Image (tube, rainbow, N blue to C red; front, side, top):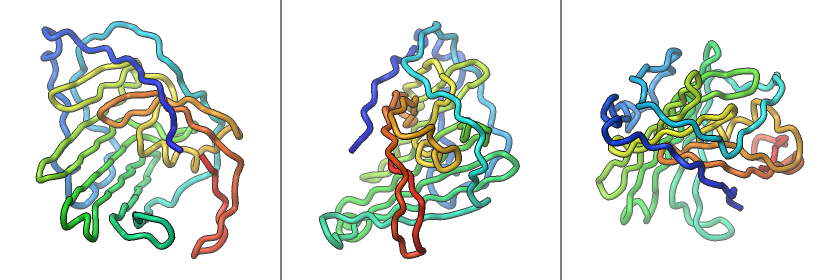
Length: 239
């Protein structure tokens, strides 16, 4: 099932202030080609326009430090199937990560294959960069790029932890919202519980950005399961 989420109301700068800093953009190296190398120092960008204070709908609580770690580099490839049973291959997704000196880079590259690629080719890339803390992954930036029908759509989110705000959206439609402790993006949300275990079965409310929006996701955490895989039995957390 899909997580239910409640929207966090953005604070949009007035038109006469919106032009005081450059618009959000996605660097060309993030749009296509090989996944960029890990940047240990996030690229700085001019501060967004002032915003009014507004309460945050919900925030995730800190979790204790964990000894769980991922390898310094890794890749996981998924095959997307249509239909039941063996299904018809219609796409593939490659997740990759790089970790070094307390910093991380997570990427997801999805593309259509087979008949879907022939009639309606699409590409979708997520890239998240940030730091690794005792509370897990703390993103600094998140990029999303979608290519379909020959057109590229890109959006970006910048986490301004020191200012307590997140700037997100398309280059010509930038928004600002309050940023709460524990906020994640679509990539870090998938890996957060592998690094810092959830406090236990139950429901969590986590602020999450998709680059285009910023919502509060309700995540249900179920008991741990052991599943059989081609590489043996694996302990898994069902969320």
